[in-house]
Image (cartoon, rainbow, N blue to C red; front, side, top):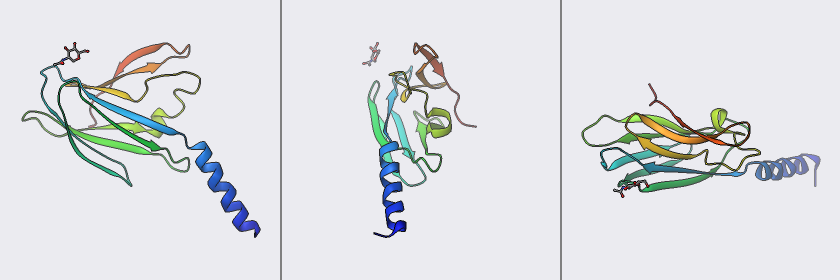
Length: 135
Ligand SMILES: *[C@@H]1O[C@H](CO)[C@@H](O)[C@H](O)[C@H]1NC(C)=O
């Protein structure tokens, strides 16, 4: 094998080994129990439209690409309301939050004011944090 082929093989294995799987959960927690219409995408993937009844969860999984910032964003809509947007996975924001902690970093509860989740602190305790919709 040429040095180039060996290098490419090595890099591929390295990438696969280091890009661990991430699971993202999106749960309808709307206060008025409306159906939640969601549609999530990344640069490369379109996960299609989904309707979540109250307390139902949509889950998807991916391997973050170590060579660029993986970003999954979704639209959210209920009732006669507008389309709202949020980045449910932003590699810059979310990577390495859970290195030493087992945590629920990617389990979103969708409320009318925005998505909430539990985030690990330095001591690995979980604190609930809510975000605003994208502007
Ligand atoms: C949704 O889940 C919450 C929290 O577990 C529960 O209190 C509520 O009764 C559930 N609502 C419905 C409509 O199932």
